[in-house]
Amino acid sequence: MEVFAILEPGAFTTVQDGGRYGYQQFGIPVSGALDMFSYLAANVLVGNGDNAAVLEITFTGPKMEVLSDAIVAVTGADIPVLVNDGPRPAWTSFEVRRGDVLSVRAARRGVRAYLAVGGGISVPVIMGSRSTYTAGKIGGYSGRALAKGDRLHSESVNGRSRLVAFPEELKPSLPDEITLRALPGPQDDYFESGLDAFFNSEFTVSSKADRMGYRLEGPSIELKEGVPRSIISEPSLSGAVQIPADGHPIILLVEQTAGGYAKIATVVTPDLNLVAQAKPGNRIRFKRVDVAEIHRLYADYRSLLEHIKRMF
Picture 1 (cartoon, rainbow, N blue to C red):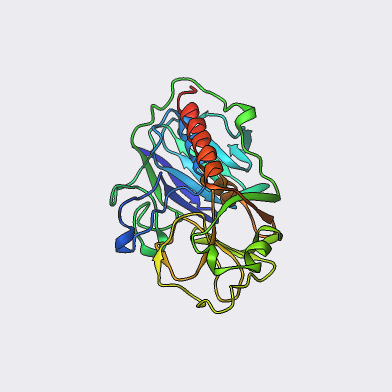
Picture 2: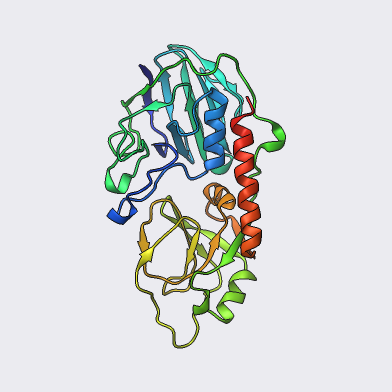
């Protein structure tokens, strides 16, 4: 069933779900929502399953004509949401009616917002996922960001039968100064003083920040004397922090498959949601954690996500 007609697409709006797994060996990255917490929350608010497709909105959102009555929710960045020029609350499900105009304006804090509709955005499933990988023109809406004139469908528009709000105490903060917890490695033995500099310096998010990765500006991280400037290319995972030849760290995200630079550390999974909301100019520091702490943090994060799924 048609649910939205795109009047203005926004800066970079794509269809994303939980990701495309099992194809990295063929050069196809995972893709999927960058801020998985906000993505899951949006789906929960409208009564969707936890892998339903949503719109991931970057910086500035779309303006859409509503083609069918529906329940929607917007989470993630602090971003104004309007229906017929009247404000609607974020992190809360609300109704839209056929003929309404739903607008998502420019983010005030954070970068990415997630718009879910009851029933989920319906696009073809490609390799087990509806996520968009724009560089490969795979998935989502014709493998690209949304454009004026596109018409979006929903699996159904029933969604949740009652309107609900996300608990205030569970909403994530959107700080300008971000601390990312990270485990040294896997190539931390390529660094000596560089490892100390990495964990004791402040970096700034550069303008080169997208779904592939975030390049940071700040002190140049030096490799150990005598080690090669690069490594044999190996699989890349979200959260790995590689140090290219210029010494400026890059936090790898969901649209990488392999890389040949030494990786000094790996950011813990829960903190990747903070990276997804970081914008150019935000400041980042890294806090060293050990394996036992990472296991505890990840277990707590998974428990929180399961709690959210059962909340409403």
